[in-house]
Image (cartoon, rainbow, N blue to C red):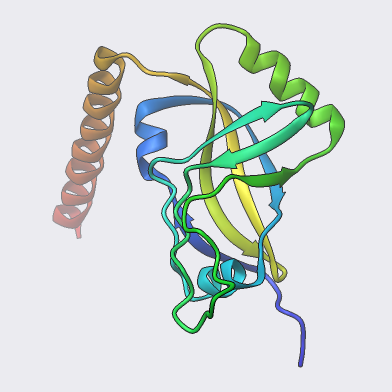
Length: 158
């Protein structure tokens, strides 16, 4: 059987891009059990409440919901357990130093398979204030209206 190629997205955390200003992103591997991998291959996961942290020189992902595998037996995994992230030591040190500063946190953005291996994209992010969120929403709406006006103008010229 040929190995998997490319990238298959399992779950995205769209709310994170709304609630946080993304500083830097990292791709990390995940330490998973067999039934977790099978559940992810079915496309079932939720990053909504998930967060990551550094503890004892290791990176951890917590509160990410990967539901139990339907065909699993007594050795099925708990849906919300903390999972170890696989990162280089230098990356862990950079992330740890950045999150030590005030206001920065570690947020999972996307869970996916890259060439058959489960990966998570995590970001060092700073929380947005309420007025920042409104301003970003207003800018997006203005861009959308401008694009709509340009396209209608272009269609009239035909």
